[in-house]
Image 1 (cartoon, rainbow, N blue to C red):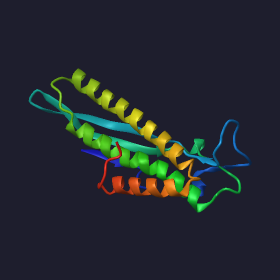
Image 2: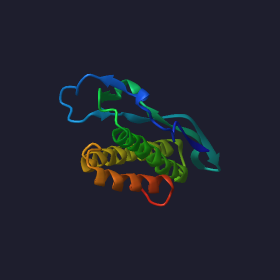
Image 3: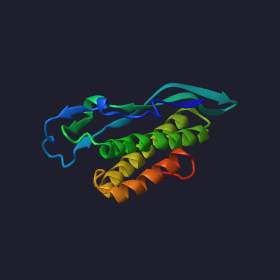
Image 4: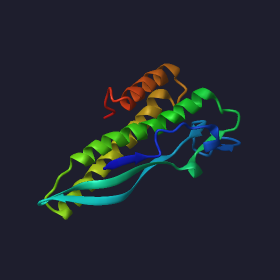
Length: 163
């Protein structure tokens, strides 16, 4: 069984370090860093076929890299940052489905297929995350943010695919 840990969850400003001003080179008022931490992999076997029997896909908020500029702790900005986390969580469900479908006739082929699926996911989620920031202007474009909120919600509810 492949399961997802660490999501869904609701962010609060306590997940962020308050900083006095934007760090050098930054054009936004807050940032969050999400990542996946996959662990507890067990391989199953049916005859010659190998597959993932157990795996935990952990959705992690790297709080040491999350910050907000003092005075900008607004609900709309927190909603935007929540969108980043929800993209990773909804994306993890896509990854879960992909990993569950992998069947190979050797451990080496299974390993290659899993690594390829993980690399593809990383590339897709990173590109989608950058697109989200670009189109919403880091949450400052309320119309675009509303459209993305609906897209993310649809993916979370299984009514649409992210990728």
